[in-house]
Length: 256
Image (cartoon, rainbow, N blue to C red; front, side, top):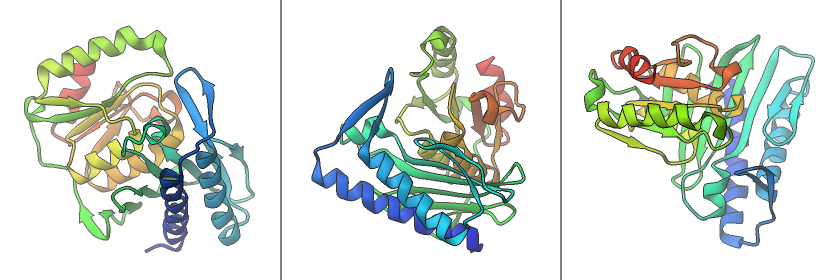
């Protein structure tokens, strides 16, 4: 395992232990950042733990984190962190949330960690070295037909002005796929495409920390990722779709 990925795994597991302890203790301090978007003291504590572990190993690296924002370092490496993806699920005790850590080197995704503390599932990837679930190599499915595919999605709850567009896309996908699932934690949804639990996924209006780790997992597992036109602007636009190579063109066409 690459040394940077080793630090990422250590940081993710530390954050996961903070989340697990808090899930048993209760007494959450919940604050609304904006409509339908919440943060708890657990998000903040988990993020701080990740940053402290990374800074100890790589003091000159930069950060782009959901709760603390951007912090530029002197190196070409940036850690893109969502300490608790699926906060609303966590608040309600719905066991679908995770820690997501992506590492970008000179603008390109280089390493990824997605950790599910509920199931103790650790998804990892390094550029050119494949994707893994608990040290077992993973690949996207061989599914070739959108009509037979199980497709994940996420509601654009932060961008309700685009709800009409999304509703049309959802209607199309419900007609053209074998099923649609919305679980509420995008980083885990992307990891599930990488390991074959989903055949495809799309969502509108995500943040970089929602996508960074999951994107590399899918690419290293043999899948394709793009924006709604199939281009590579998803980290800027927040609109993402991904699938097995044979389904990807049909997914793009359906979403258009």
